Length: 145
Picture 1 (cartoon, rainbow, N blue to C red):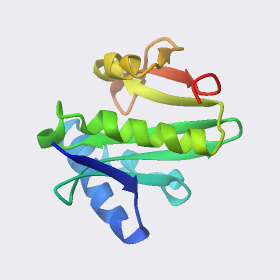
Picture 2 (picture 1 turned 90 degrees about the horizontal axis):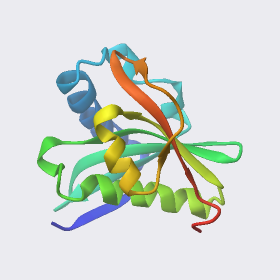
Picture 3 (picture 1 turned 120 degrees about the horizontal axis):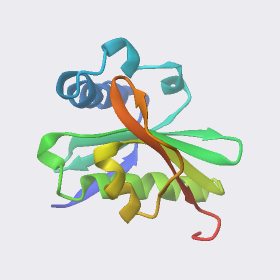
């Protein structure tokens, strides 16, 4: 499977939002009103494409000294196919290009091993977000640039 990841244009954002709604709202039962937030306006949005079709999305919010990665969602057809890895690798490359020394995210418990394989470490205890257990994770980028 050939996966292409790139930043999205404003006109592509509705496709990314549709993926997020399918994954988070429909599959995981996150309340719709909790899925979209004010950070969408300033975030850099990414899309993962297979055969020209968007099958995954994620976003990067630049903050002082670090990048917050979030809203990582891959359609069922792309899971286990390297789409998530390609998406996260592209977002981390953007963090490095922006010379951010650290990336962090809030991971659902089932996704922690995925993030650990890409170098992230758990930095918090378990907490609930949108009714789903999560833990915070970070990746130091300055030494891996």
